[in-house]
Image 1 (spheres, helix red, strand yellow):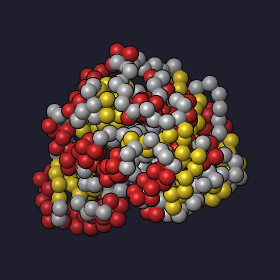
Image 2 (cartoon, one colour; image 1 turned 180 degrees about the horizontal axis):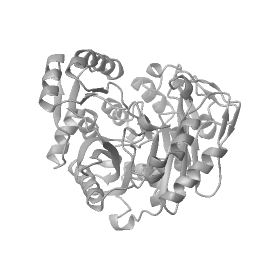
Image 3 (cartoon, one colour; image 1 turned 30 degrees about the vertical axis):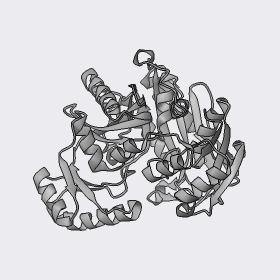
Image 4 (cartoon, helix red, strand yellow; image 1 turned 60 degrees about the vertical axis):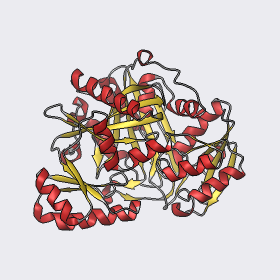
Length: 443
């Protein structure tokens, strides 16, 4: 049983976790840096524990500091949220060694999915199709892989995701410079310069499947489409993924469950696929062994609280759900509101929010840690909040999204809200089924 939960994260996800944990009767302790001790999550939690100075490396990414703070707070368990240490196997091991529960998959699964090359091998072993390509430990190997695969190709960091170290290369002449950049970014972000090369699918869709496992059984909660991206960073997510043939949708869901069972996976996870928009063929990309930023759209169409499921499984419970009990209804769309200036190449815009008027009403959900007077520090991700809408079908959801965005008002810092208004009005988005090159044609 978890009585005292330490939340090793910040921002909207820390607040989101605290709400469910308190509903389940747990005492919540938010681990906060000096920059976040007065934040909304810190105010909402039952207790606050200082974990270090503002820089992430000295606080949210400092394994020893987080563990020490959790132990001092007499926590039974640690929930890592997303990002930061959420997929760090060493952190999970340290949590367990300190006598606490790690709210996430076991270390074996984290190791298997944390390294993209290993994840690729595990995916193949589970029977999943993968994009042609392979590892490249040196620039020479990367060039050789690219010639085997054929241009264009994608260069990706072996040790992490989030778009860091990812480069598209269209010509052999561009490879040396792009390889150097990719390896440098991978080293800086993950401490590991290794990259791998894979075929670039010209009209690809990013479709993922939400899964739950308890180490014995596994099930899926349907698909999400995350194809609208900027520099490999997701901007819009929706569930279920629109305009998919039934055979493709079923294939994706069954493949995701097969991988989850193969891993004897425990907790919530997301299996990501690249779907060829022209042929419907799909390829396994990776599994995110944590809760995702976009999890609310799945909650909206299924009625399942994914944080609650994480906590229950972590405490030792078997899944209380069956596949037949998961009956998605309606359509949900999420847009990420970031403190970035679209007019200045999306430059981060930290500062104080002088007015925050988030939309409200039937079918509208806001996951945010920012209210009027809230501060966006310069040291962290620029995510201010997420606007999620649900309606009986996709056309109604798109219309609700547009009307909700029209009433959203954030003053004091530039935000991405104007970009999302343009997206919601674009005929291609209204029709559904766009690919990852959507922004190239946005008016």
